[in-house]
Image (cartoon, rainbow, N blue to C red; front, top):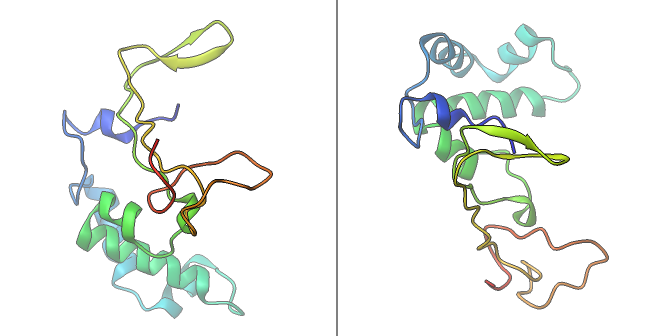
Length: 139
């Protein structure tokens, strides 16, 4: 279980572009800079502009298209097998037995595709099937 930002946005389930003023100010500052200015301002490597490009793109997307859109569609993206679906929010956790768990009724969504997301066939890798947004088959 993770700290879930949705528990702190006033009863909504999405944040969209309703950022706290200081966050919005920071995003606007980064989005308004050139990629090279982002690199210089944050001391990112000059040999590779990719980190600065990614930071600039993510700030621009978050400011213009919203938080949830940026997580799902913004660049850079994880490979398809590593793009996980969002789960219901858990706003209270407790230690029970030897693990943390949600302290209220919480039903995770297990409707992740299983199997190879590229071919749609059975999973045949030597590691557990992680599920993803796309590909594979639904249980």
